[in-house]
Image (tube, rainbow, N blue to C red; front, side, top):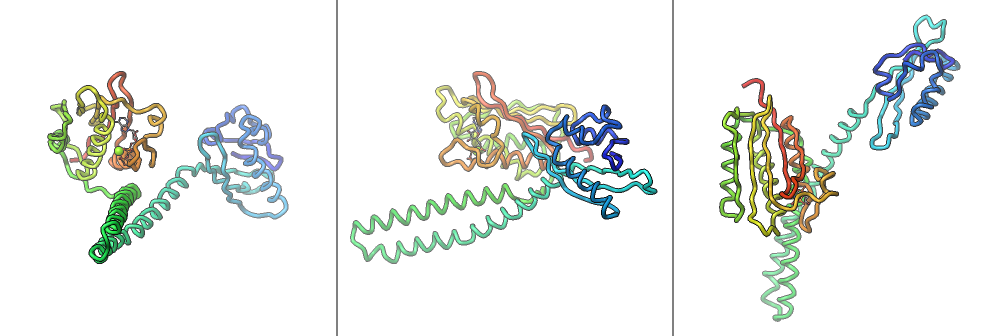
Length: 333
Ligand SMILES: Nc1ncnc2c1ncn2[C@@H]1O[C@H](COP(=O)(O)OP(=O)(O)OP(=O)(O)O)[C@@H](O)[C@H]1O
Ligand SMILES: [Mg+2]
């Protein structure tokens, strides 16, 4: 946007309208302050610009760079504003360069958060095994010296320590998995064959896995270990969901080819996602299970996105949950 020192808008481009979420075409030659009438949330931002323009008049500086946060209802937008006086500034015009750096800031925050999480997980994990071993050791050393009642108490207490520490280990492992830096070991993989292998693992589990696998599926590049984790997580969820089924527990896994993608779907015949979970099931720590971490689907989504794929969940009327995964067919082989 170009403005003069009276804050009148002299010119602008479409990107400015987009970033500020106001139609600037109706604002040419009007005061910049008038756009905060259209988008009230910009009031502080516009006031900030005004202050800087006045400061230019006093200080004769060459440019100003400043960050602003606009608080929208669902998410905040971070704008980077650069004000530069136009050369041969007889008319006292200024160029306002506005960059939407929301995504960049978010990416930086995510990276920082992952790093902290990774270190924390590591630090927590280290002492867990010594705690377990020490508890066992106390049991063996003291067990023989105590009377029956005290031995019972000791055994119970040690069992609690060992079990709870085990639970903690699992939690920390999953947590560090969630915070893990993305690094995929991609191999050309026959997804149908891969699904068959995994469904074999569940052969004697009392659950029936039915597959309908497309015949014209090309091999795609995936990290097989990561994908195994995805499938096992989803099957485990389906299994948990169908626990109270009165009908036979059935998981249906299908594959299909759609344009440049492979679609992999997993359907169960449990009760489906409850309404409040459906909206946020992929968020970390969302769980309805007493012993769930709520990281299962968060990790699944992360892995799929690292494969440049997408995942969505829905409920099927009268029949349960449906998880749809889309994976790109590799361009180069
Ligand atoms: N197939 C499904 N049918 C119905 N609800 C599901 C299904 N899969 C997941 N959910 C719901 O989504 C929640 C989140 O699932 P997620 O896998 O992220 O965590 P979790 O299964 O609760 O914990 P964990 O994966 O650590 O065992 C579950 O608690 C459950 O309420
Ligand atoms: Mg789960």
